[in-house]
Amino acid sequence: MENLRLFLIIPPGLEDLAHREILEKMPEVKASVIKGGIELEADLDWMVRAHLLLKIPVRILLRISESKVRDFPKLHQKIVKFPWKDFLSHPEPEWEITCRKSRLMHTGRIEETIKKALTEALVKQPLSQDWKKKNYSPQTFYIRFDDDVMTMSLDLSGEPLYKRGLQVIKGEAPLRENFAAALLYELFDGITEEKSLTDPMCGSGTFLLEAKTFHLPLHERKFSFEEAPFFKGKLVRKPGPTKKLPAGKLTGFDLNEELLSKISIEGVDLFSADAMISRTPGQFLICNPPYGERIKMPGKKGHFLKNALQKFLSMDKPERMGWLIPSDMDDLNPGVSDYQLKSKRRFRNGGLAVTFQIWERL
Image (cartoon, rainbow, N blue to C red; front, side, top):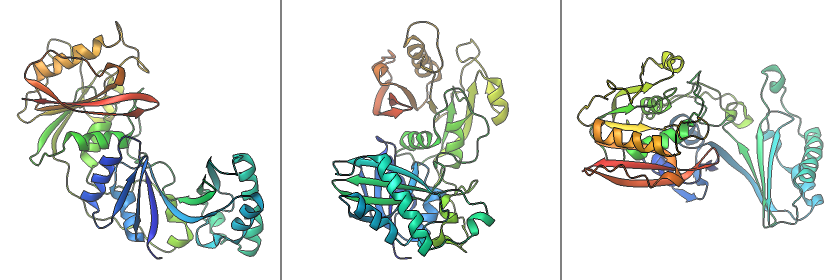
């Protein structure tokens, strides 16, 4: 195939980190950053390696068609004439349809028209029966109408890429793996020497697992592109590791013994008298603490967070600390003079406005 037009879906607010990850791990492409994603052109090999190596994207789409469509007869005609045999592996794909400033705005009728046209198209372009023999899953096509331009894209990833296929059990309010990877990447920005990393409220250990695997190619699950006609007969070959995140010794603490038994780390109440985190030189802390939304906390909102911040900075004294808190509480002052707030990054996590703060020792 010629170079592919790809769109990498990125959580809004993390686009710059995702772009940096591409430049560091796979710099042979020129990428354009837009809100909610990254556009680029690359070959098939790059696309495969991107699925294995990149840890921040949600999914990767292949742009397969773009044209003016102002009415339903034209839409029907476009779908009937499209070369489905090059992209379609299952006769009943799923459709994600969005409309903006276009004459075609009724997503239900658009989907109905597409399905009828596809049925007609497959009479002239019959599919291989591999989908039955090998039990292929239905693909997902993204159809976007914007100012009367229809853009059709094929989801290459299948399940979201933050589903790594690594974790079996998760806590009550887990952080998605791609968010954890992005925040770790920012925490270690500019660091070349290895630092120990501690998560004092680690839950199921997402931060620690992402730190351990950030540079490793992962293929613990199938990707949708592996069943597409244009990939038929090809094998996914794992590339070598990329530049390693400079996280050395990984340590985690949590109260939930059931979670910790799955990842071999220590159960402890960090506010008990003997809960001092080891003051290892060059130690970094990172955590996604409970803040009273999905996991209820006693006392006034923010009281627990302020006490935790004071404890971490005044007693545990990390070289650098990152933590994720609600944006309406991101003005908490720990009252510790030998630390400065290095940066704030705001985005949405599960619909909640949050801020990732990084504190650095002076």
